[in-house]
Image (cartoon, rainbow, N blue to C red; front, side):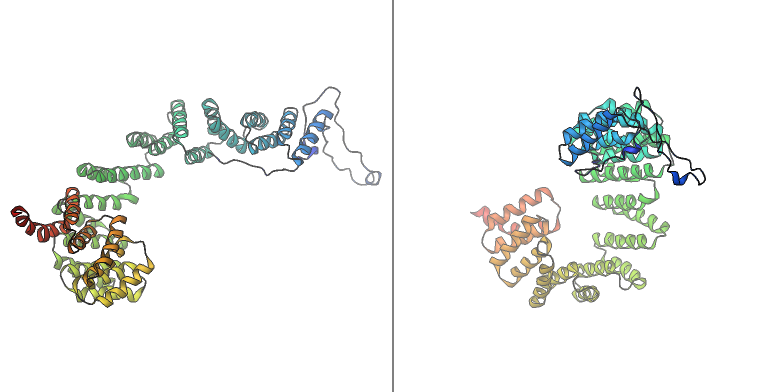
Length: 493
């Protein structure tokens, strides 16, 4: 909820001379006598001091004494009663502060009500009133105070709604505020901020359809509102990513294509290309990528697109074209880490280990603790060469920097397998697989299990993984190389 606790354990006594009471019977207004020595000087205008009734004075002294003795309930009663009898809103403020401090919501609500009667435009009082209404789930009170803010301080209405939305923690609180916002929306059908907050609330409640509906209503009222435009773009991106996760590829691209704002257009465009690549629609992906490259002016984003272009070639096993793109781009960015790393991976796929090593060494020359480069170099040396001591040096350093990284643990386990240390390999690869059951790690673990004679366990591991990703190259390679040759033997048995 809103955190509006405003006092420490004991607050200072309100200046009695500043408290103006409602006139009681027989009360008079007096002024301080002028000293004789001042009579000769020019007359000075004196502000009258309002006398305080003995009953109010007694309540204030009782309240202050109770505060000092930490008898907060007594102090609250005294200040609340005094607040009803004086004009000065500070007495009611102090009563509200005490009530809030001891979590006495009913009395806090009464104190804030008195405070607002005496100073209806006080935003601190309104904030406390909102907090109390939220805590008590008093919809009528919440609507009343939000309407008062909209009327008296419209500039703060937006921030107040956003603060309320951010403060909600439970589903119950979210549902209560969502209902309250619906009441406000009916009362103020042209207030765009209410609809934007409703959209935010709908996201919190995982109701994406309602969120999109409310943001559309917002933009109908204020089509040029940048905050609303950007939030709509975020919603569309989220919807696209959600559809992609569910493998609803056409729907994902459709959501990404609806993004129009400049701030998010690039992210949406590249996301759509990634979906097409996942579907192996390489021609469509290439056409979109070419269009983005033709119009992109931002150098950083253009660089990202060129790396994506190289990856697209690489996925299609068009490695020379990928190398060409990366090499040409490196001419203008010779030390770019992403370009060097991408080219090293492509060189490794082509079997050009020397070129791969050269690019990774250049990265490590710039940053000897680049964990990704250390792991890539160590793994590649273990997998493609017999330079195991060098590989171990790089991988041990990577493990020291990131001991819990599953990919590095897998690389080290695979190195132990290549060295013939099967027991150690099994230990590391099982750890890596538990952390991240990715297909390449699965294939490494199956290879080790098979070498240890645990063939049925290896087979089950691969077959279970193939059910989830039947086209994965690591799994299929193991199946074709290891499992398929065993089938005739199994049948003869």
